[in-house]
Length: 303
Image (cartoon, rainbow, N blue to C red; front, side):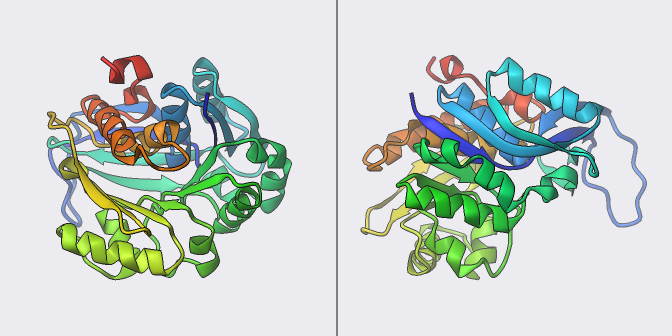
């Protein structure tokens, strides 16, 4: 069984159902609202464990009812949470998701305890990191913690996977040199490289910028079109998405990353088949509203 460590955020999502996104200054009525578990890190960890990987999670929560709600979810999926700790001075992270009738969303984030993760927290999980096959992280937690995670991983020949979301410009050179696989969407790829991603040629140019920065493998996801991959060796390709009726795209990218990590061989020789499995899992996620509740289990993907 593959061993994966995820460093990342925990959010309780409040989903607000609306016909369309409001204009500046506009007041609108909602169709409905609901609450679900979320946070990019938690979503990726849940996706990895549901994909069949032995998954450990490094994260922080506040001392509140939201934390209890999230911990119960993790226990249900048998996620290893011995490195999920409590910060007494910050609330558990929260996200407010505006979801329109076309399944598209805009998201507002309160970082809370997610922003209190320290280098010491990473050191406390060092033995778990050393035993992993790969580590995954994103940008809803402090970059300093991410760099420390990747340093420990690289020293122990553990694959590093970076999801550069939410989008940031001017990523630290040190971080990119420590990254084995980077997985941005088209918006994030443009933020990092300055190249607007519109077709395979622009994806290739963006990937080459990242290769020049030290990243061996680049995967760029482009929503319902699919995903492009480029290896520093020159191997590249495009994997088409599964066509489905999308209800809510929340957690689609996180599902892709968790499933990809759980299925990808260390030599990357099965990269297209792993991406295909990840794409199928994502296509199931978007057919249900919510984040973690919509992430499928391995048996659903293998039907």
